[in-house]
Image (cartoon, rainbow, N blue to C red; front, side, top):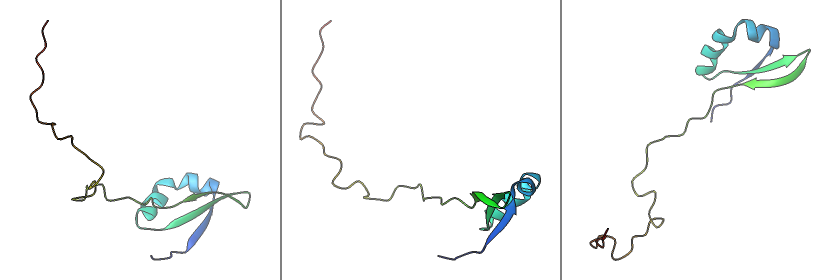
Length: 77
């Protein structure tokens, strides 16, 4: 894991330059947003999980009954 330096920025400046900050965040940069010198928020990239299912990831979780493919009973109406 790469540790990146956190840049401190005031809330007013963050609001004025939000779109520029978001472009930098997309590249991995992190900002600590302060109000009157006190930290109030952190703007950082989100961790995106791989959403593709892995083959065999549900092994042992799914169980089929022995008659799962048996013909369904007919319904009389």
